[in-house]
Image (cartoon, rainbow, N blue to C red; front, side):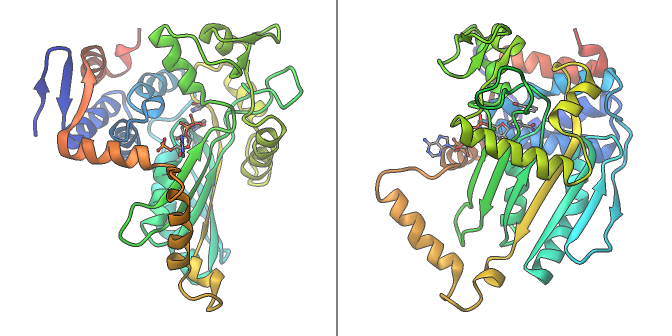
Length: 350
Ligand code: NDP
Ligand code: PYC
């Protein structure tokens, strides 16, 4: 499938979109490991209809390069592989995605050997969704969790000042002959990218997402972006977000969301911090206590869907199937912006 121009939408195959996104990053001066890894994750977001982490993120990534807050030529390296169950990758100031791709085979090998293992990524710029990473683990029959701080835009429950990040948390569980069980969410009521999508659409936010800079509840996206977001589930989301600051910030020797914002100096660029990915081998944990853990999990999933409840990621998997079969539809404006980014690289920034 090539490009098809409909009246106000452009249809591209998944491969065509990926090539174009990669070309835009190449043009902006990113080396091939970074351009390729970023194109894969951004295209996956667009393919799965996760617009808050799809092609609209290209502009922010380019701005971050232009501001010299990320190194477009960085080559990630394994900085510690000596421990039996930890692999540490230094992104060397580049984007997280190439560092993840470098560490993944080591993480899989160590998890299969030890039953559990961790991948630590340090010194990375991070703006992407986490589900591609836990899906990369479930592809190997492993369960996994991924988490990272962001920059301070979320108030702790009961507080008034942004301190926490939108700190995403993702979990994946492998399923035989089925798409994996995966959830991935911001620990704020909504991802910041979601607020930006509302702003661009000229729509008001749902109640309860954000406060303005005076601490009053707001449904205005601009006031929310200038103010702060709320953690999901009040003290519960606040506690999970705090855990992420501790484990994927302080514990791995990297920045908290507050430190990341202090370093960056703005919320309009992508932040630099670390990321933690934990992987588990279900058979090693279950031993022979109750037969096959994956089979037991299927009975459990069935009792969820039997109630009419949908599993997380089902919407994404349907969107993925449709995109793989019928292509990805971009608005004319989105397509023109992508063409501009391909042609001009960093000069496409307004
Ligand atoms: P959503 O609230 O859109 O979705 C969260 C999860 O819940 C998804 O797995 C979703 O599956 C699932 N879900 C949604 N509705 C239902 C339902 N009715 N029943 C069952 N499951 C459901 O996510 P967020 O807006 O919080 O986050 C979006 C993305 O932003 C994430 O991918 C996250 O990684 C990313 N992010 C990245 C950050 C970073 O610093 N890099 C910071 C914050 C967020 P489905 O997709 O199928 O709807
Ligand atoms: O959507 O909250 C968000 C976000 C922050 C950094 C990358 N994505």
